Figure: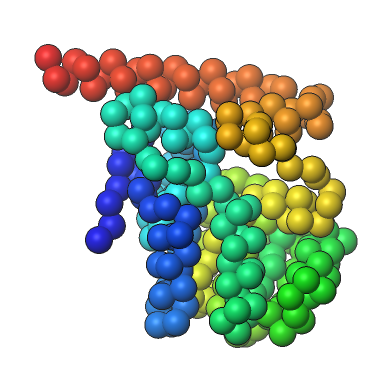
Length: 250
């Protein structure tokens, strides 16, 4: 039975990584449709002002906490999540599952050389048989429906979309019926990591919720404003929600 908490008016599932994978595997086997999304501090902040992003996220079938900050926030608010389910880790586990179960995967997003690098790496690591198809993430608005049909025609069981927010969430929410793939998921910049363009933070930084800082160190000129705003807003919203919870108990 699904169990959800709520942070900043966003439902978040309490599933562990193992439980999430089991739900996805069942959906693929039964040929039902499952739309998955992850939320981190930045996305929760942007959802407060972007209604289309908000609607796309909360209408998803599974919503996992991607960022460690969200797990800490859940504990601070008295509704603790047991663990984070990082999008890139889930993607890696599902690619392995595809190899073990004979599923097909479609990779959509990033630059052409990046997405091709991801396909080449997984083809070598596992098998070319898991690849349903791929496409880069550069397109015009009028091409969206034809891309959705291309994915549908590929026969994929799993779709990963590596495009920045809110574009990926809105695309998946808008075209999921045309795509008609059992499992669909936005994975942000995960293709860059798999292809070796971006280095992921060391495990100790992941555990302490410092992946954002590691990312900032890689591109400080581009990232400092984004993280300054979203981190400050996240803390403000967290304190505000904590205060409202206390007031409601009084």
